[in-house]
Image 1 (tube, each protein chain N blue to C red):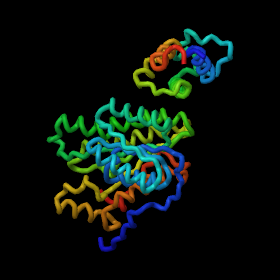
Image 2 (tube, chains in turn yellow, green):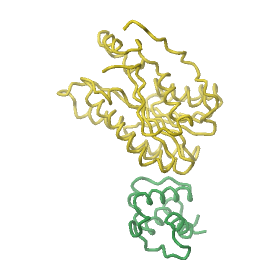
Image 3 (cartoon, each protein chain N blue to C red):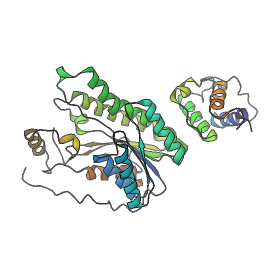
Image 4 (cartoon, rainbow over the protein chains, first blue to last red):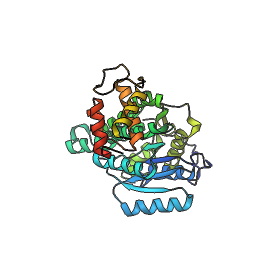
Amino acid sequence: MSATVAPPSDGAAPAGRALEGRVGLVTGAGRGIGWATAGRLARAGARVVLNGHTDPEGLAARAAALEAETGARCLAVMADMARPVEIAGLYRTIHATFGRLDILVGNAGILEDARLGMITDDSLERVMQVNLHAAIRTVQLAARLMRRGQGGAMVLVSSIVGLRGNAGQAVYAASKAGLIGLTLSAAKELGPDRIRVNAVAPGYIETDMIRHLDPATDAARRAAIPLGRAGQAGEVADAILFLVSDSAAYITGQVLGVDGGMIL
Amino acid sequence: MSVRNRLLRVFRDVLDLAPESVVEGLRYRDLPAWNSVGHMQLVAAIEVEFDLMLDTEEIIAMSSFEDAERTVERHCGPAV
């Protein structure tokens, strides 16, 4: 692949304050796509709940910095997506603090590679619990808060691997494919309540999830991308911002690839 | 107003019942309107009326008007 299209600056998306007055939740907001998305939502005027579970001080500091930059209320709430009781607690906090929810970005996820014959029960449980079961619980609870208001918009962060599969990632692929089924079903069920549900399917994105790859694999993945480079977390966040905004008011039940045309 | 009276109003509104209709004793699926979709509409209306968030187990177990009344009272007390 010879041509390379340069990424745009990762600065603030020029979205105006299109989400003013709305409340958004981003799960897995501590870094990567989740953090970039929280920034996009806050800069668009939304009050943002940033969820994470491993670094309370770091997440609180990030929320405070984002609030100082944007003037939008940003609240860090710790909850482990592997624990249903903590997910319920997260939503109780949102209800008690804001009394509403308009936007859900279900981004929390983990990646554990293993060949089919080497998948342990623990790994299977862990990946499905965080990537899929938690997303179902999150959609379930978000819908209840959104039904109280004027509806809402949800975006689940799937993966190109959920659409195309990948050797050594059967469990991760199954969990991300499950998110697509969840998206399609929830879009049908929640449409009458004016709740839109879409998914994004990122390709090869510069995040912590790809930094463990060996140089040969990394080079092979990049070579499979027609745009000639890996994507940036901010570029996925821009797609999410579009899908939760009123610009996508008639779009639901869709899976938007953000992959530079990647071929798997 | 008591929990019961507020719940009666919610049930009649959501299930499109006449003001004088008997709601006490009503059970899930007794009426075409109280199907799974109607149940979630009831839950949403109850949560708004009493400003609470029910647990999923409570939503599933709420299979009669009296169940709903007991559930709300557990959260709010008998007179809210």
